[in-house]
Length: 402
Image (cartoon, rainbow, N blue to C red; front, top):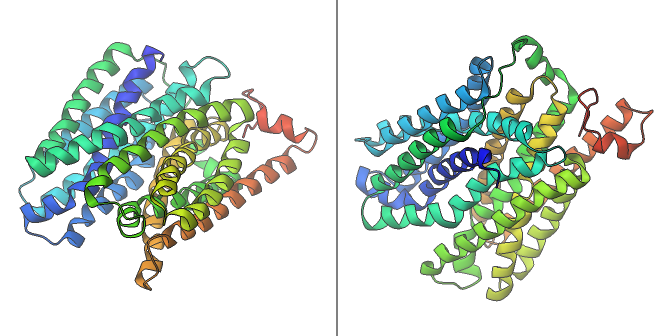
């Protein structure tokens, strides 16, 4: 790994832990703060809401400053608000702390992905972005299981202390290792926001919000599916989630390679189709423990292979508005999180078994693929004099790359 990218990976690790560890800590927090588990679940929604609000807002406010300064400020916010979470005396205070903790999430990934693409070698931009998202996958392999174990056996507050420690390490590494890139002196926020008047911007937003929701249809209900359908014990769920995390790590790195090799647009469309097929297979084979485990790895890999391509797709399309556009893609990803968890749960309301959320996820991934293909078709219409392959792979500053 390029050492200059290490601070971004560490930031992704801390963000991944605080986002996903909450799902395993809900019973402990509910018991400690004397609320029901469903009410404690609002803490997950609070964080996602913070991401959606903070991603475009913070980048819009801070975008005129040098990227390194922005990232340091965002990590200070992230660390402070997670410390606030660790000391929250009651549910309402923790709810506010979680909302605030989510604010810097999307902005950090948005600015970080632009920085990663700028300091990468030519033709390796998506792979550099995937190294930033590598922190998220490491969080699912090691950070979240460790945080959950500590929360169960000691105190959930110590789990947030781990996040604070990672945040502090990230701050020092940002200061020491991240190159000092220049600010955009000619930045015009009004011109940047005009990007969202374009049809292409909304095709990407809908592709991410709906398509990646397929991941969360599956992942939100993986624990009950593996216990109730595949027949694993509750104690095995932690190891199953680690297996999913390993798949996510492998897929994330593969996605960066595919985006650089075949273009972000083609990679995004193809991976969404593959995700739809994969989730259908999950529905049919999860009754067998062996095939259920195989598909856990495969589904995690396919889902996270999308991370770098969709981020690079937004960056390449939003020339002159890269940071705010990249942050909006992160907000869209969290909308997909909320949509996937909600829509995936609908079959369960009507007493279908726990493999049916994967079917809903397949439908969402397929719809996301339709938006991706519509985007590709539109770019071809905008550039009719160029062969489609040239439109898909061009990387020059003067062309609209997808």
